[in-house]
Image (cartoon, rainbow, N blue to C red; front, side):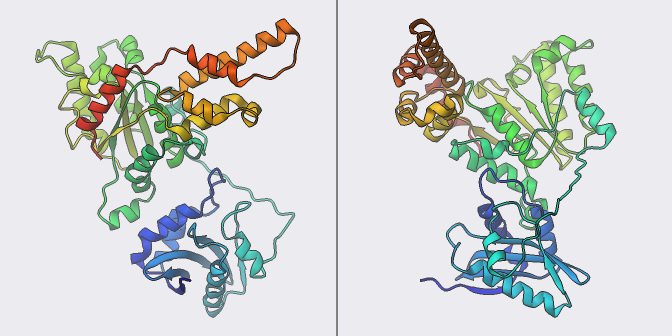
Length: 426
């Protein structure tokens, strides 16, 4: 059995501390009361902080913040494989000893229901206070910026979109490590000389979830989400598309934080034909000039999505303009299962879900939605015509699957495989 020991937190522990934080957060749970930046800021500022380690691996961490005679425990986090071993209680005991030595008489915390570390508090004699109500006011945007965001058609997305994206584990891990973590933890990124990304490209067949990933990143960061529609921009551009682009980017510069999403970016960044008089040539040139200015501000991220990465202008794909070029393919089995569960509702408990998942290989989310609705429609019509209350059968959905015209043809999938090999940059 591995032996763990406790010691004081060191700055060199930051990277592992972030991993422990991520492991301690239950999927779908509410955001912790104390943010990661607040926790790590207190630890680095010399506030009481203790880690548990096995060998050189950190398996648990506890951090507090002293306010006079009262201290707040900001974090009790444990690695996924190290729970129910008494480590949480030991971390608290050591933290309490340090707090008492600093004259603290009252130690308290605020945690979400069922949070990691809750058992440790109960085992260590902490009293659960009932009848208290926690109020919080978060003002994400100043009034002027909120008005500008509305004018631009943007919005703040609800939290939890990242956690709700089931499956697609490979894509999620890449986007989490390369994009989300450096932007969410800029101080730690700076310490390790990691440059947070400013612009990325997501490419893949239509309907594979590129827009959903962009929205999930905005939700995770808590940044305003603005989608720029090239086709709509073209219809409202009095002085031409290039002028309209300049105007939109000038307005966007007024926002302190922003995730700008451009779908089907090939419409304004397609390969130029070499003729300087071509309208497409001018628009692509303008976008290429605007991107460096957009990248100058830390709290902004540009995500461009395309179904045809090979049609983008080579200058657009050059390193220095985009940090990463990330493929997003068809949903994998866990993702398809989650999509089926979403559309089947309670019926998912009585049907052979695994068979539906296997039968919908290479289906996009939209394809699965169509098949689910078509299967339900067949069951509905049978119930009306035969005056029965029989639920939808597996055969209803399998028949609907067989009649679904797939978005992704073999030619599209072959082209995607080729593009992954030739354009991916991670």
